[in-house]
Image 1: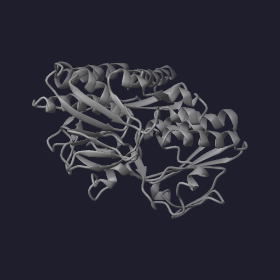
Image 2 (image 1 turned 120 degrees about the horizontal axis):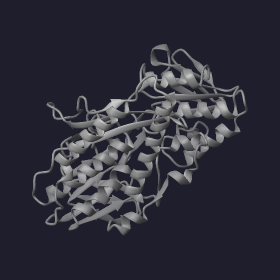
Image 3 (image 1 turned 90 degrees about the horizontal axis):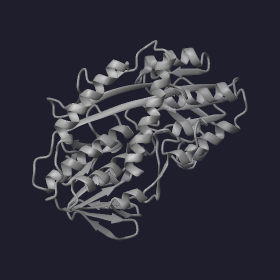
Image 4 (image 1 turned 30 degrees about the vertical axis):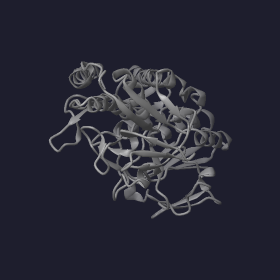
Length: 424
C-alpha cells in the first residue's frame, strides 16, 4: 500500500468510526449481565470496551488460561525472530479494569435458560452471551492425523506449546533437510498465515541451513497477496520454496507419522519436519451448542453479531461468518470494539450503531520485509459485511526495500498497540 493510499485508508476509517462509534456517548443507563467466553482478541476487546462505555453492566469473562499466547507474531517465534514471552499476555489488566474473570472452561451452554455451564460444575447466568472461542480442527478430516500425531507433525495453529515444538524441530533439523507444510482449503484462522510462515521459515533456512528447502502442499489454487509473496520469494528465496497448488495435487489426504510422510492425490512426500495445518471449524463450545447449524462456522446477523440460531448469543472472531472479513486477530479486535457499543445500546434499550469495521492483514516475508492488505467493512445491500470500494489497498508491487521495511515496522507497531490496548 502506498503512503498516500494508506493515508486515505486511515482517513476513511476515521470517518467510518466517527459515524458508527466514536461520537457515541457512554451508556450509563445500560444494565444487566454480559458473559463473554474467550479472552483472545475478540472477547478481551469486548470486555474492556464494555467497561468503558457501559459501567453499569456486569461483565464476566470466562477463560481457562491465565495467559494468552497470540497467533499474530507466532510465526516470528517459530523462525527464531523473537521469543514466546513477547507474544504472551496476562489477564490481570482486564480484572483491574473491572472485568470479573472466571478461570475455568465453558463446557456447555443452555440458550433457553441463559446459562453457561463451567467444566468445574458451576452455572453462570447471562442476559447476553458473547462467544469468541476461536477454532478447533475438524475431526477425521485428514486420515492418520490426531492429537497424538500432532506431537510429531505439529500444526502450530494454536499458539503456545505447538509453536515451540515446531520451532525446536526446525532447530534440530540437519542442513539439507526438507520442511513440508500442508495448507487447507478456505476457510481457516489467519494469522498465523501459512505463506508468512513459509517465508519466515525460508529466511531461517537461508540463514542457518542454506542447503535445505520447504515444500508447500496447498489445498487451494490461489491465496491472499499471492503476487506479492511470489515476487518476494523470487527475490529473497530463489529455489528454496516449492509451492504445489490444488490443481497439481496439493490437497492433503493422509499422513503417516512413523515415516513423516504425507500423501496427496498425486504426491507422496516425506519431510524432516512436517507442519500439518488441518481443516478447521468453530470451536467445540459453539459447534456442540448447535450454533453452526449444518456448517462449520456460526451464522450471525452481521449488523449486531447476534446468532441467527439462538437469540441473545453474539459470536465474533474466528468462529463467526462475518461476510468478507477474514478470520484475523485484527478483525476480531475491530468486531469487539463495535460489539461493545452494540451491546451497551441494546441493554440500554437503544438502537445499536451501524458497524464500520476495519482489518489489516500484515505479513512478514522477512524480518525487515513486510506486505499488507487493508479494508474497511460496512453492511452491504445483502445484509452482509462487505469491503468499501476505494477505502483499502494492497502493498504496491515492485516497491523499494524502504517501503517493505516500513510495512514491517507498521506490523510491529500494530501488534504493540493492540496488545497494549487489550491486555496491557
